Image (cartoon, rainbow, N blue to C red):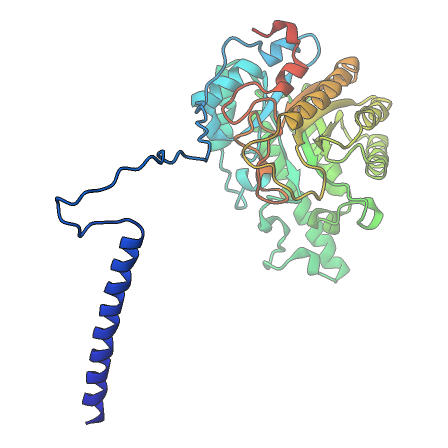
Length: 414
């Protein structure tokens, strides 16, 4: 009984609400001058009020399609009297517009990821050559040299390297006798990895990053506390270089590669390590300076000073991973898609200063490699946060930026 009564009350209330809404809507329309319900012969008074004009400014931006600018100088040709110019790439960039940009502007290539340990030997004894071969074949077909990056690294390396014969982590072993067994096993695996790769590519690749990022001043002894180091000490470094020389012969050049080599603490520890290795007869030919920099730091003089120190040991210097972030370290701002012109000009000025210094020291620098080629593809877009980055000489449309003209003689600009 109560249920039926409630339903009737709800129905009545609903009808009342509907009628009220209709009244409100109609009243509002008349007040606003809306006369939908006027008869067709109604007279509508003319008004002298002008039609309202839009107050918001409409900006139509020109859509610029990606293309390779054929009328500008070739970057590597502009530096033919100094040193090769290179770029790091992924296999997908060996076709299409990006491939054309590379062919025009660089005469050196390095694999961004395709030649790292986990890419070439993800599982023990099973090598994957497909992507690395693709890069080598592209380079050979276009008369471009290839650098190898990297035989040994603490990152992007298969976990299997560091498991003992029972599948347990080597670093957890506390028994000294077993630790020696593990060290021997790890160095044997390293020997196989290095020897197999160098033997395959020694006829195609002359410049090799053998070990990468082994210095970390904050870790004990200034050596990065990687699994390589925890199990073998510095023997993994010695083994890598000796095996690479054995497999590749005297004609290939072997480099130890690291970032932040302009930092005094890191530079000095790397210098100590390299000198120690050279004193032991370890065949190190040069130092790779990654040179991931930003628009304010480090001073160009610090970069050159570090190179001069290693040159004093009779070693070659390479700039191996050059890019220039728009943001200083720990700055999490984002310029968005429209980077201010003054920022691009500041970047250009810094690139000019950097390359003028490189040219002035061409006797101790044998190559400059960018860690990418254009702003549409850079690891910095997600490091340390996801945002707009523009670290190279070419923008996202593959067109020359002010930075390009800063390092190429502006007099050649058409």
